[in-house]
Image 1 (cartoon, rainbow, N blue to C red):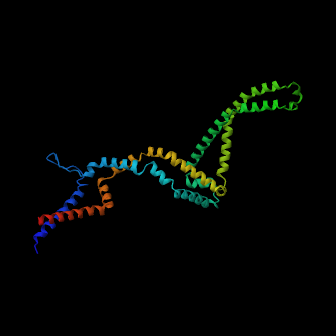
Image 2: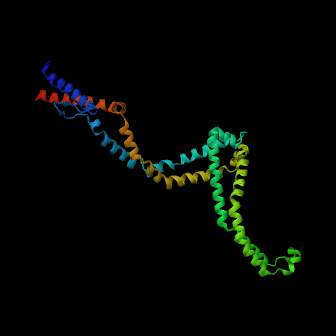
Length: 301
């Protein structure tokens, strides 16, 4: 047997194996530039440490614009199985508290600490009061009252209501009095309306918080189909109309870029090697195979 014919393939295979292994290792190593006599050696640092910022930016752009964009997320988030999960979650929540003797307040305190709950309650009271007060003032109750009074006059108001003064009462006098009442009524509403509203809001809010949660879940169970329909529509509207804005705020490309840049190079190397261990080993062995084939060809030539 001519052993000299084996030398070329064996040497070529060893060289291919080693060079490919070194090439893969040089993707990450060295981690920092190496200088000799003030001259930076070529290929230092490794390709990934050197180009980490550019790679992070490119990957971020691909992820943010191609892999996870509005169209892709809409397609995923508006699948029927997502709606089925929403319906199931509503059923689960209703079933969980259907027989609960806890009040709304007690359940809320289990989910949120008391101080935060009180703070939320105060903010809700203020918001409701301001909203209702503004709406009532805008309604111009004085004008409504005057309009209705004049309408009653035109329809033949029973003047006997005025007793002994009925003789002096005529339609024009009533209209004159009514018109003078308009600003007085509006002033009373503006001056006292807010306090009246906030007391009503507090009273109703307290009544709501003190009722057993089972009463709410019982009503929710009766209206489960309606609740599911409302939640489904709200969810769909958010995904279709607000998702793009949410992605703009999040800036997914920037998030991915920052996360990759935040990785320690050694940690990044370990992660990539774990993900691509099989493929990188295949490249090394492919180098050995190609080296052996070239060595065989050289031996024959």
